[in-house]
Image (tube, rainbow, N blue to C red; front, top):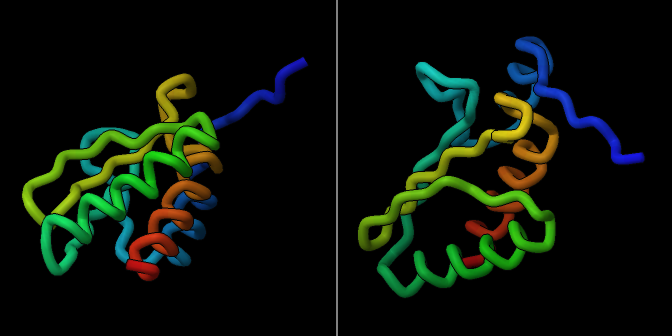
Length: 101
């Protein structure tokens, strides 16, 4: 039987965001977002590629928009209509990958 994934309540989301550098709640929807900045397009694309591999492994994919060296990322678990632990885990992984660039 699959494990049910539930959206975080407001307190749990606030606690999680306090430990996620650069991430914030998204206005007008139940999601979190962050804009990353890199030295150039090559660094940015390398980061996005590493995130794509991590997201595929986790079977959890970000919404993102990129211009040159600035990917804008939004995370939400669409099946639940809100932010879940899957989003927090991917946000942590993205922060770690950004530091490794």
